[in-house]
Amino acid sequence: MAQVLIRQLDDNIVDALKRRAKAGGRSLEAELREILREAASDPWEELLRIREALSGRSYSDSSELAREAPRK
Image (cartoon, rainbow, N blue to C red; front, side):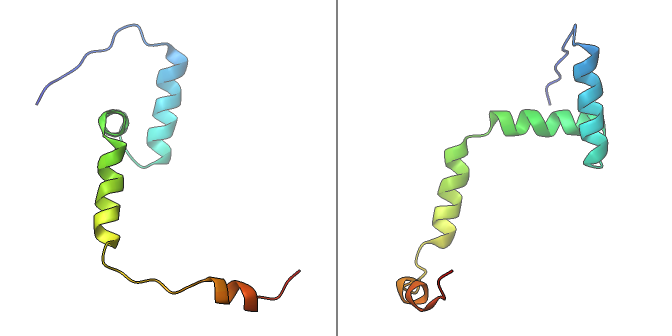
């Protein structure tokens, strides 16, 4: 696996990332790895995966439920 070194990060940024990591129960390194993974991911890939998972299902007509719902 590759390694990356980032120099001259503002101390406030590092502190904020440490807080974020702690809140998520992760180490700073794991948090940064997750942030970079998300930034590099293709959003369409996830949408296509969801679309594939939902394909072939049938859904009821919700207009009847909407008509029967009490109006406020």
